[in-house]
View (cartoon, rainbow, N blue to C red):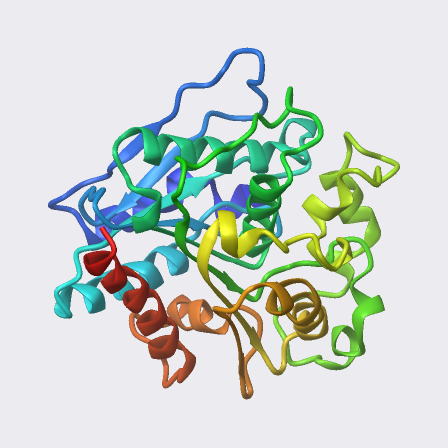
Length: 326
C-alpha cells in the first residue's frame, strides 16, 4: 500500500502540479542533529505562499503508515482560500514525518520531528501566539504527543530534546480531528470500536500486531512513555498545566459513526475539559472518521458537511484574536 500511495513528497508534487502550478512546490528540509538523526529527513510542505505572520502547522493522519495525501492538501487549500475571502492571510505548512514499519520510523521519531518543525517556525520569526496546530487521526495523536512533551518533557531527552516556548507565550490553538488516542487497546473505552461498521477505519488494521511496529523500540510499552503515545491512558491530570503554559484554545472533533468515538470522548471528558476552560468537543451526526477531509477524496468542496464551516470559523476566530493581542 505504501508503494502504491507513494511518499508525501510525491503526493505534494502531484498536487502542486494540478493546484498551484504558478507558485510551484515550496519544500523546506530541516537540518538534523547528527546525534539524533533517525528516519528520513524532516520536510515541510507549504500550501499556497509561504507566510509567517499567521501559521497553521498541519500534522497529517495515515495511521503512521502513510504520509500526507492529496485529499488532505485539497482540504487545507480550500480552507486557506475561504480564509482569504475573509481577509485572513494564513500560511499553512505540512509536516512530512517518518512512517512505515521500518525501525527508523518507530516512536518517538515523529514526536522529535514535530518538535523540530515547531522550533523551526519559531526560529524564522513565527510568534507562538500566531501559530495553531492541526492534525487528524494519527496526526491528532501526534498533537497529543507534542502537547504532552510541552507540559512533561520526554523522559529520554537524547531522543526528543525539550521544547520551550518563549516566556509568557502560548500557542493560539490546537485542533484534533478524529484523533487516534488509544493505540494499544481501543475496545476498552467503549462499544463504538466494534459496532460502528459504517466507518472507514479497519478493526484488524488497528490491531496489536500493527501497534507493536510503532513501539518497536519500547517492546514492553514502558510506563514512562505510555502517556505520550496513548494520551487516553495518561493520568487524568496529565494536561492540567496545558492552558497556563502551552495553548490558548483546543478543538476536538469526531463522527458519531466512527469507531474511535468512545476513546475520543473519554479522552476529552477526562483529560482535557476539566483542565481547560476554552476546550470544545464537536461530534458530527452521521459522521465517520476524518469525515471533513474524506469529502475531498472525491470533490474539491465539502459535500454538504455541516462540520467543515464550524471548524474553519473556529480556526479563523483564533487568528482574528491575534490582531488584538499582539
